[in-house]
Length: 188
Image 1 (tube, rainbow, N blue to C red):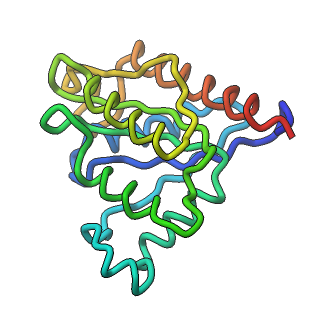
Image 2: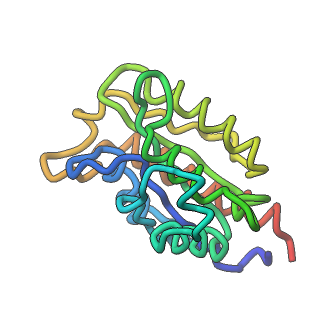
């Protein structure tokens, strides 16, 4: 990928809640894109629970749409809350569905991870588990900067707009690093 090529990024939030800080963080990423990056936000709300019997009959339409979006994207931005020290079931379910054969679409895909939580740990454990899935699926995770946002209630306003300057700067740094990582990995 040429140094000036546009990096098409697909963002996926692991939270379905209307007032989700993680979805708000993903929307904020759309405001902080560096030059040469676009962001499309995927919708995983209509995914059924993974069931191989259902998959044998064909991918449900929302799953096939996500698989197509992943294939079309140059890079991924995964945003996860932390539930019970791990990735949300919603995000894990979407990854499980999208990764089924044939033609697993995550293979070789550059990926950045971020998350936000009201707690003090900033989704560190969830991101660690998510990285394990990324490795198994042969995604190419960006290592730095890590965006582990704690104390969510102090970083967003009442309309869920990211207002904390330090956090906005960190997200912007992550997006710039993802752009450069993607271009480095795909030099064509």
